[in-house]
Length: 433
Image (tube, rainbow, N blue to C red):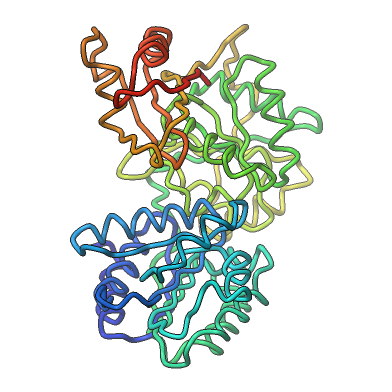
């Protein structure tokens, strides 16, 4: 067990309320997931557990993890309710009460007000990434939702930071909770962290120099504003880099596609706001680059914690101007150690250097609703062809779309096989992204 699981799970299984502080990737989803599944009565078709999440991506990820944990419990019904998706299919999924509902506050409230979601039989309420929900302005929605739940319930609150509003919620809605605090700092020994001082107007060109010098196969670049993400992605594309932007203004389908392409290694650079700093399951990030420093040193630590995971070495690079020195000082104070500052003149740049991702994504216009599974796509690519399965990467299946990553040298061949052949005996439209 991870430290957060070892410290919180016994109390969760006993039915106690818990407030826990834990960093991203600490295993907290399994802690509350095992707890709520342990007391679930699958014979009773009533909503018994509710998990509130700040973003659609985190809600989807939590639902996937709960389904994985519930594989040994037949007939467990789990429904995800998030904004940005049509109400119709959600209303249909609520006609037969799911055992567990995972969702974002705004959409959950809409269903509660419509009467399509009922929480009279709720026994477990989970607030996941509670501080992030407050950052996003969900305080009133959260309190309204909690007001519609039974007084006799178990409440589990998980948060990476503990601002004042978290303390307020904790005192208001938790009963005599066990307080679990797991070290919030990431293992700095695994992360090589370097700061570069820049002049005004040099930010984008210095970022290009960092990419040319370090050549990371995958990197997350953090900006503080949505518009900046999009502009920076377009600027990098023009200079020959495969960069995608992730921010709150994207439609759900586009957000899904961006995350799929980055996680399956068919895009090298993800440019994101802090919504991507927490909760998103992006593995094997070689480098985190702070295009701009966060004004909050704790957020900075969560950003750089996306690299150097699972025992791997990580690289965190940060740009700052002289006027931002107080932010650097705050980070040093927070992590209780000085930061290394290098001169940009030490960066070795290369003319016409391109950072090409090793994989290419193919999009198939078929998904779960067409009963298409990963094995069907793999079979269509490798059966009666000379494509070795080791050259085929991650396969992601959504309701109406599927994505398969293939190594760049075989992309044309794979596209031809899928376009001209059949998957599960049927022809589907396929395109290269």
